[in-house]
Amino acid sequence: MQVSDRCPQCGKRSLVEDANTGELTCNSCGFVVTERAIDRGPEWRSFSDEKGEDKARTGAPTSITYRDMGLSTMIGKYNRDASGRAFGSTMRSSIDRLRKWDNRSPAFGNQEKNLSIALRELEKMSDKLGVSQAVRERAAYIYRKALERGLLRGRSIIGISAASLYAAMRDTETPRTLKDIAAANNLEKKAVARDYRILVKEMDLTMPVADAARNVNRIASSVGLSEKVARKAIEIVRITEEKEISAGKSPMGLAAASLYLAGVIEGEVKTQKEIAEAAGVTEVTVRNRYKGLRADIGKQLGLDEEQPTGIAVVQNVPTV
Image (cartoon, rainbow, N blue to C red):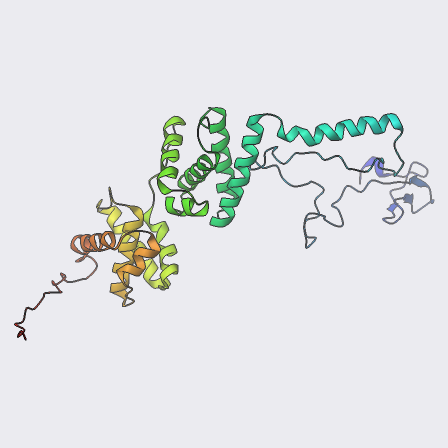
């Protein structure tokens, strides 16, 4: 307790606070120090949390994924003050005018309209793809910068939004492909790739090299392979990186081939067609990458040289 916590009447430190009435009284002489004490603790109930666990006094945090950063205001439709008293005619006229401009202000200017549409599309695509909040905020940041630099002129809002989301995924190393982005919003893969190249070139974005190991678990879960096979496939990817034989190869194709090779080693063989469809590549890519991996690191993995199979046998068939 501090000196100010002493009773001003008797000077003793025996102040008692009543939580129900808000009174601060002295337990010794009965002097009422304060009639209405201010509770500076957390709220007893939360209107934003369904379970009521969030009892903080602050509201929702600001986020770049909202057009107004989450700091918007709203004027109620009832012409009454906080105490429930009705407004006078002059105040009612002023509130009506403020309410009208409050409703119009979000749609003020083409740039604000553009940003509102784009952020809504980003939210839809993010929900479909199941990405984290960090990726959403990074995508919103990239789109805002593209809008400031005038890169939206003559281009589709949805296309640049999809390209911004893909750039955010590449920047955060989230395992998603151009095909996934295009399918989430019914766009062509070439169109999204074109807009992505524009963003990288005009905004000087530096993207990290895609890690093939991040795609292994996703493909393995799609085709129903075990965790043991997935770990073996990641080990194979790391070996290719150490030997520098993964340069210039598609990360998704390398991950698919590594997973197929790991399935062969562990005895959980899936067809190349199943793995290729789950990875979004062709069977030829999986087959070629598999042959290259077996030739380069087969001995290190304890595999013998692959014997040629599928030799056709020609027989003389009598004609009728």
